Length: 389
Ligand SMILES: *[C@@H]1O[C@H](CO)[C@@H](O)[C@H](O)[C@H]1NC(C)=O
Image (cartoon, rainbow, N blue to C red; front, top):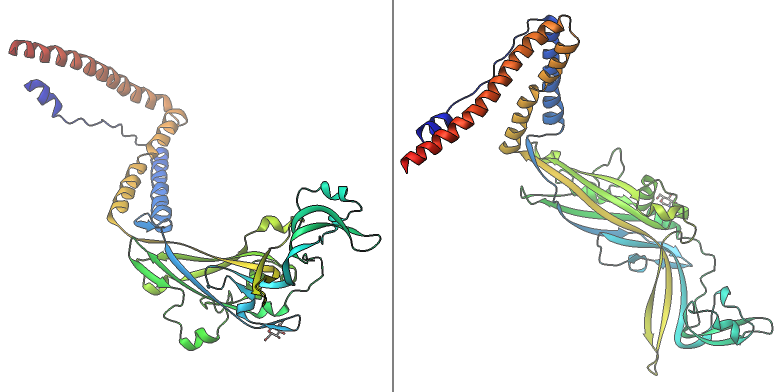
């Protein structure tokens, strides 16, 4: 047993061949230098490998739209054109409306042209009506023209009328209040930076040159930054807020950066359903108790506020791990140097002979040691065990 233990408590170290050659010496040092530079400049300075990072950003977004528009001689305020009204991170600004007033439940002809008919049998071929359930009857509006009848909200909406978007939307402003927290470091910050004065925040309008931290955005500017054309727009614009914070630096270096993109880029080139629209209704009651409603088909620009970010701070563990990785990587240079030394250098044969001699002996020695050592250990240990028994 004792010999097993003494065999275990030994130290082995490798024997080196020193090659006094300028060429290989310079290559060796240059490779080592490159590896060191890579680690210092890229891994440590650029990638900040000495930090732990927190990407699980927590965020809350509140929005408030401001401005007045005129549409069909009606003045439109925020309650008319923003939906939903809660001021969340997703909101729509309505640019066009088609209103169908005084709809009641009943029977009426369809409005879409594809429901033209001459006899009842024409209406049997459709499975679904556009605005209600088909009754299967063909009603004649006049001598030449017939339309399939539906049961539903009547009269049916006519959405083919040409409308122009509300021009003033371009000048509407959106105030965005964003609070973030990095839970790992318990670090909190908001996009209304403490360095900005009240007076400034009340008046400013965001732009990418002079007012990069202003939390108020003009709709027309956002559309322009997303490289879209305002007059033909209906779609989804993403307002991205990025927080890239190095918490080793001072607090005022942790700032938001804003960017804008069109999120529904796919429908941009799609003629089937261009833009973005939805319907909603307002309900009223008549004196006799029956409901009637105003149906609104709204064309809108939707805004999604997306918050992203990560924070980094110095930490001992990643620093140590990466330093160890750096030091071991310096040794990688020897592989390259060995290849050059043994194959391409003048006198390679000599070096090869020298090295192979060593290697051969080393390998023989290793094999012998491992094999005989193993045998010896096995036999002696088991013998001793036997004896002991
Ligand atoms: C938007 O505001 C600017 C400056 O106040 C004004 O010149 C322009 O006419 C406005 N645009 C619309 C569509 O109202």
